[in-house]
Length: 482
Image (cartoon, rainbow, N blue to C red; front, side):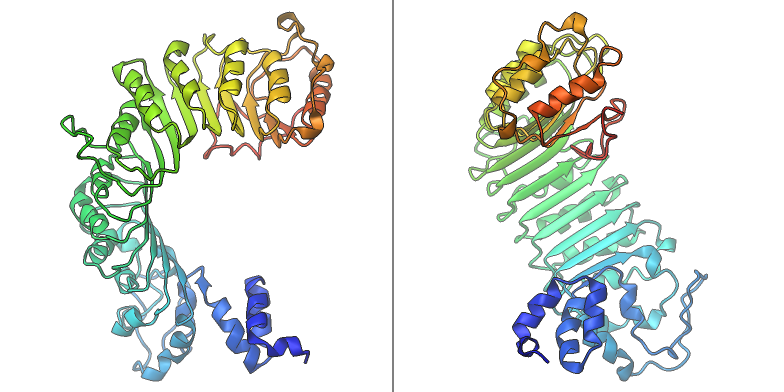
């Protein structure tokens, strides 16, 4: 054997870079490699059921199809039955639990056993998926047993929230500080949590070491966010909800929260974002990313544009959706947000004429650090002129999506005569032409012009009628021209 294999540190580092299947093959070579590889194989376990397959085959009938009750033990449970379980679980740092994977296939005596709580001394991350009806949960009581002192991150995907759901027991476990050093807490809520607001608020407020809180929901989560405002170590807040703030008109700047916050990511309508920004008193902010839905002309929107100026040094991403009329004078103050790196404007009003060539140029000029620009504006009078301007003045732009009119009747610019273009310096990676209009048969010629401006960019055409699930999820859009 080469001397390399006699240096455990090098072998361990090499094995850590391999896929799981290759780690398993190496573990079968000899005892020495097994002892090194096993820690990597069982460090991140994508399915908690893998642990219960380590028990002796004669202990119970390993049913694969769901049944009405958990299977009974075929013999008495002995201490030696846990040997392989403990040998592997002591290396585990991350576990993924899906309710369907354990449904009615593990005997109650196994997953309710008291030793489970001590089986994962190095567990740092727990991901719990598909928390729904208790009848579909299999052994939900195993989850509170996994809330061990070493745990640092919990992710909960919840389909049902009430006092009868397993989610309630998990929240109680967190609130009772069974995981006292929790640093990250993430909720994905596909249901209203009003009935559990009390215990959820306790669970969040109890985690005094929490550094990151993420709550994604389609419902009211304002009380949950409010419960986190006094956490002394909270640095990152990521929230999406129907309502994300509690309206406290009497709240003054001397009574603000989130004082240690360094990163804020939030999605909500105009009043929600305005209220949330007003509640933040941190002097440590380094990054703010905002998605404002249903922007409407009102006193609140005017107040929001003023409030945004307070976050100007840190605001790097801004997405605004107009469901009604767009008035440029109301939007114009965002040009003062000089640190913006990504800007996304969505407006589907059929008679929108507010975003013109000159105003696109103003945006490009106002944001020197811009790397992503998306203008999904229906019936806009944008021509090829601002595209030529972008090619000349924003070489660092990486992603561009825009509706424009390339027909010869609306363009005075000959795109092939761009004298000042420096295509070798342009870093654009993706250009989405969206629902742009062209003269018949002229798309290929224009595509070649765009390629000369942005030689590294992929040209594509996304469906303007569909919003991406996440920003810039248009990399999968069909290539253009067809």
